[in-house]
Length: 81
Image (cartoon, rainbow, N blue to C red; front, side, top):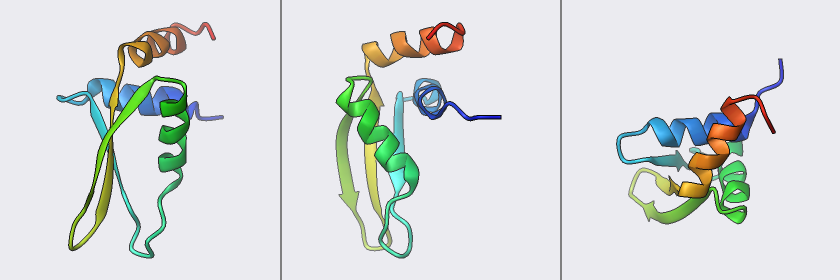
């Protein structure tokens, strides 16, 4: 079964209390694959990057779903693409 990462990430953001999704840098200082997927969603206007935090133990990037992203999620979950 193929995973629709756009739907998965938009749904995760939409279900969050603050409508945000964050990605933590790996221990080897690389970003997981979802970082590039969220950057792609940002380029289409479905999420907006609202910041990043470089902490002592980890770096975190944060995006928030937009109204366009909520509309896209509705399309994706209805089965029409």
